[in-house]
Length: 140
Image 1 (cartoon, rainbow, N blue to C red):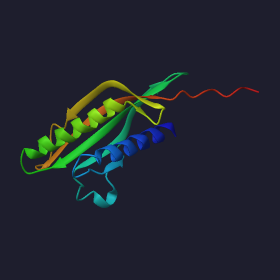
Image 2 (cartoon, one colour):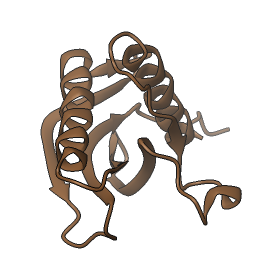
Image 3 (tube, rainbow, N blue to C red):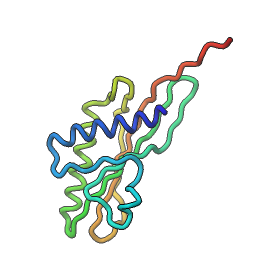
């Protein structure tokens, strides 16, 4: 449940803050594109996906991948993609704590898709988040 709350917190934060200065405002989706849009993707788009997590008896952490997509017949697609990725990265690094419980590590990784269909441009931003500690219940 905690991971679900984290990705929903990221989604809510991005929807609120991207609306302030980004036109068009890209939809921020959880997971993948809806099946109804599989044949004709939505652009621009941001998709939030949990990746890898780990922890111990104390606190855990998880990597969250933010997948980005734009579409353009020329190199403006690359520029649009990088602008969107940079805007999201800056927003998250400035805030770093969502809903007073999810803390983003300052490290991040940005990667552009090596191959892409003719007019589709894509990339991902990988962030690492600390998960709130789960306390063991008292034994009876």
